[in-house]
Length: 275
Ligand SMILES: [Zn+2]
Image (cartoon, rainbow, N blue to C red; front, side):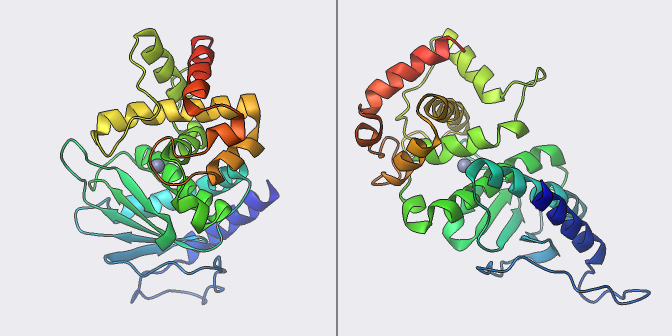
């Protein structure tokens, strides 16, 4: 909490101290802002809209408006604190974020994190609801925290079930129903009752539709919650590190949980019925 307060003060100072390149600053020269050091973020294309304690925010023509980008900065820093608390680690360096025009088509992405490049790309038009963008950004920043916590080697070969499931579970605060329940939990319960649960090993390479992605992310989040409440966080970390590659089901569930994924999945489905 104390660290969050410190960072929020630093962010506030950054917001106040930020001056666009070339602009004249009236009054006394502001005290130089401290920035998170460690690994540097790359210089991206587009205009640098602002810098915060941890982030460099860029914006391209047709992307979210400059005012909206600046308006997100404080919430983004706060989401780093929240995500860090869930993961148990913090960023090991800065992150560059690129706000670009929306993607189109059935497989359109809203955001993507290239964590080994310390880069996040978000695809939204100039007048998108900023609460929505903040939520997706919290999810993408969570991936960077995962990368920095598990290390590049383990993170790059992480099983997509645990990679995405953990990010969706860990940012559930940003996606809640009007009753305050995690949205993924309500969605999975509804899918279970309708007999529409997908196999956990559903491949987004074979079916990249945005709708399929949303449905399976919800299930993966529920599955990660199940693993954590049933077997504990240490074993989730062990399973995360045990993976041989990105495809769904690549972690060594048998070594970590004493049974194959198919059996853990059956037990998870029984747990979902009681949700
Ligand atoms: Zn993700």
